[in-house]
Image (cartoon, rainbow, N blue to C red; front, side, top):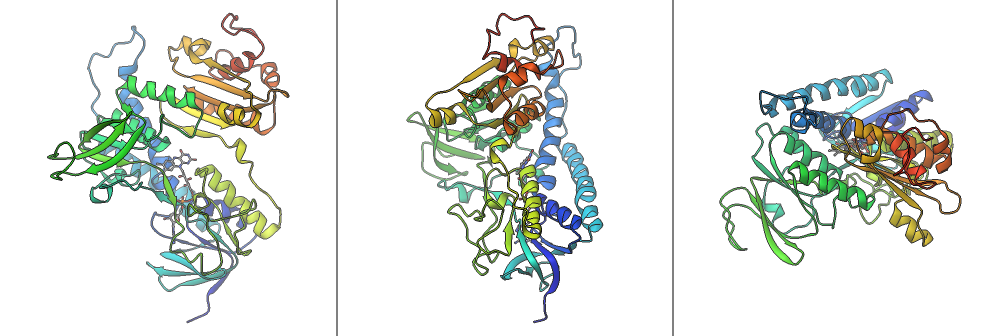
Amino acid sequence: MSDPIKYDLVILGGGAASFAAITEASRRGLSTAMVNTGLPLGGTCVNVGCVPSKHLLAVGEKAATPQENPFEAVQYSDGEPTIDWAAALDGTDELVERFRQENYVDVAEYFETDIYEGYGELVDDTTIEVVDGVDEGARITGERALVATGSSPWAPPIDGLDEVDYYTSETILKERDLPESIVMLGGGYIALEWGQILHRVGVDVTILQRSERVLSGMEGQLGREMQCAFQEEGIEVITGNGFQRVRAPATDGGSETIQSGVAVETLVDGTERSVTGDALFVATGVQPNSDGIGLETVGVETNDDGTIHVDEHFQTTNPDVYAAGDVIGDPELETVAAKEGNHAIKNAFGDEGVSIDYDSVPAVVFTDPEVAAVGTTELEYMDEHGTCSCRTVEMEDVPRAKAVKNTDGLVQVVKHHETDEIVGVHMVGPRAADMIMEATLAVKFGLTVDDIIDTIHPFPTFSEAFKHACQAFRRDTSTMSCCVQ
Ligand SMILES: Cc1cc2nc3c(=O)[nH]c(=O)nc-3n(C[C@H](O)[C@H](O)[C@H](O)COP(=O)(O)OP(=O)(O)OC[C@H]3O[C@@H](n4cnc5c(N)ncnc54)[C@H](O)[C@@H]3O)c2cc1C
């Protein structure tokens, strides 16, 4: 076997973490190579994640807007909009293609990164071999290696699930002919975003969530608000499911035999229910792509959930191998993957010892209304300190929300009970995804509620909701002139 081709840095995987890594490597004048397969270059975010879902949410929003018009002064005379889903997917494909070319293919070329196409495995310390695909047989080695293989949709072990076809957030992007109704398993952000997209383009959606509320990893009020908003919009949300079995047509057993589509047999509050639809969509989370990539061969250990074990500097149990992105686990976000990829290279080649403050990473759900959060929840604070210092302001008390008749939602602030530093902010409402940045700075830099109150916010804006929630620690905000600073 010929000697491997030598680089400074070799990378397994070609997504957000890897591209941040080659950007930092290029800044340092390092030679780089990347092995990628499965998803095209750019990985999840551009091809099947952030970009397509946000584009299609905007399509759905436009489709639903006439129904949501709150102004009597505006009337739509020509009735319901018509929606061409295949055209929406064509638009998505065009957008993805452009993003992929400009932000990934051209970038790799600019940084002179060699791209190897195929399935890669670590075969010896920092050596990667392409074992399948276009460049099969290629072997590359580096002074350091980065594993950034991302994650894939995960399906829970439910009886019968293996025997039925189901959509995931990846496969739905290929379905040009949507079914009339879909049963969706899961209640996290992917389930909510895709549930709303599908509902708004005309699919009858039922969301089944195992926990007692949707968005179970976030502050409780957010999930409850979203559940109400979804129900009001016409999306059925059933929480507290004990999934028992999934059945396809002509399967005997259970309370009935279905002729077409799919049935999910579940227990809700101790009562058996059978929820049926034309198709099933599984949005129950992701699993790390860490199997079959040679980790054990090179001494890289994994955690119980299959994520790669790294220290706070993204170094694995093999000191020459670093790992970043979804494959090292929660929070599985594009921005986090990119920051980890950047920091891994700084640590691997510059010994800079940089790490990430995960407590100040904002999480966003791009539904309508939007959901956004950063930092500690009320419950977490109670658990840690035995007391809580929290205030919630409803959007209906915020002047801008009232003025534009868009009053769904709330903002909750959790502060330190002694120092007044803001430790958590949780919101549902219009523009929450943009508003969370002010809160993120507050949490990251330890600003107090008085720092926010003292800062003049433009009037009237949704951003005032955060200031009002801070003011609520100091006064009764229900009887307040709108220009009180
Ligand atoms: C539906 C959806 C919506 C999302 N929306 C958002 C959002 O709005 N905002 C946000 O911040 N995040 C969002 N995310 C999450 C975000 O996409 C991921 O966190 C991010 O893309 C992870 O980047 P990564 O580099 O770790 O992995 P990836 O981008 O998945 O890249 C890994 C690449 O490695 C390849 N690969 C795997 N194994 C091998 C192998 N053995 N050999 C060669 N190649 C291999 C994969 O096929 C892939 O191309 C979303 C995710 C989904 C699924």
